Length: 256
Length: 184
Image (cartoon, rainbow over all chains, first blue to last red):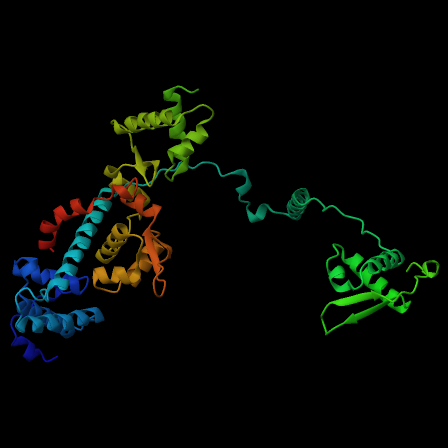
């Protein structure tokens, strides 16, 4: 920015005070207050010019002009131009209204902030009191030098002991034994009662996996012995067992 | 059942080792069988009055929903002298404004804070988060589900407030608006 040009536009304000604005609303509020007019009757042309003038100074002083300032600069120009257009009585709201509302809200924020500042000022020198209570026994801190192998061993023993106390060995169940022979007879009995026995569902619904496996072996045995036929309509579908009518040679069965 | 004076001494002892504010409920629970809430409150009043009198370097204060023993503001000078360094980092104007917005409008989203202040406040909110004065309070169920911010217990302690309702009301704040804004 050309300094000569700037100089021709009136006295340059002291730079120190530019830095104190918290943002475009803060700056605008300041400008409006300087005009000493009601916030509801902002002289838009003057305030808008002063706002832009301040931004120019900020740029001239190489202060970083945040994007928000530029957004408001554009908005102010828009409001200013709207005011220049003839308005019909009572037809439209004041173009300044939204700006005024935002300024009033922001003014409240500033007031609340100064309330908080006053509150915190009263709190200076107020520190919570805590007498040094001895730490809880579990949190005793050991000096590394005091720790020897014996102490480590004791600590490990403690940990293991606590672990075994907190995690008692789970109850061990003896696996239930199923014999193929038994299952052959059981299955033969089942398919005899039902013309087509759904083998797969039966296997899958056994509570014990071992029982399921034994049953499968029994089923294969039944088919091998020619006492049952297995069929399936398509892969992965239900497998049905149907009796062939042949008798089960019970005595010939061996227990696998 | 302990005498009021004994109970007061017990309560004081608990607060002495607590450091953080202790709720009346906790005190009642710790005080033992048959001690009623009213008695604990009475005991707290005894402790408060005892420190209110001359000659005590401490005071009992009701902050963040509980009670705690704290040093008195008039000893700020000697405390700082003794501690050598502990002057609290002051909050900047930007931090105070942002904190005010969050305190009075909580829970509130980042875009709403930015709108009210007219400037991007992300960095300030981050600082407040680091100082534990504000915290995230979930997400707002609108487009983009932005995070919501609220003030913390630490905020109440810092500003010496028993709870959020103890903040100056917006009406009270408005009364100072005129004088304050013109001077800025």
